[in-house]
Amino acid sequence: MTDFRPTAMRRWVMVTHTATDGRPAASEVLLRYVLTVTLLDAPRDRSMTVAELAGAVEHGGFRIEGRAGKVISDALRWEVRRGRVVRVGRNQYKAGPRVPRSTEHRMRTRIATARGAPGAACRP
Image 1 (tube, helix red, strand yellow):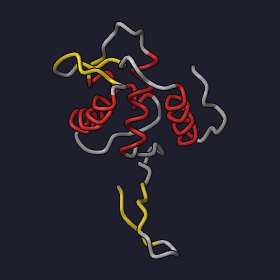
Image 2 (spheres, rainbow, N blue to C red; image 1 turned 90 degrees about the horizontal axis):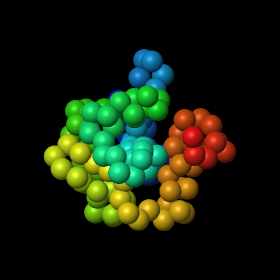
Image 3 (cartoon, rainbow, N blue to C red; image 1 turned 45 degrees about the vertical axis):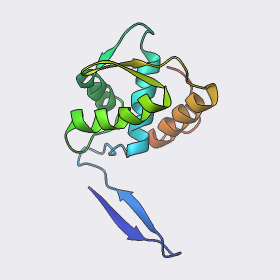
Image 4 (cartoon, rainbow, N blue to C red; image 1 turned 60 degrees about the horizontal axis):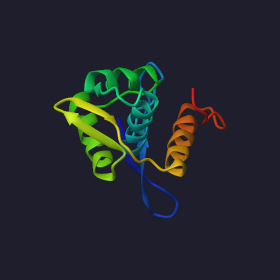
């Protein structure tokens, strides 16, 4: 569940609540990062389905709020426009040809921080 709360500076920030099993809900940006890194870690010639990506997000310790297929395809639409992900066909995605190293590092660092393991942003 997500709600908005005011901060001391009268700005509203999004607060994400954890599920009863303790897994945090992946925010929109974090979900994009998890999906992109999952595709980058897969062999270059292998495409993944939305169901496989949803399983990877769940296995990675995050949960997806809402309809998983729609949320994932919406998140990957942004990455497709950036060239980091390629849509192979309906329900099929693979890593794109260009992901700058600095961008990949930032994605991995943010995922590691969200998992609660700062400094563990290396490749598995």
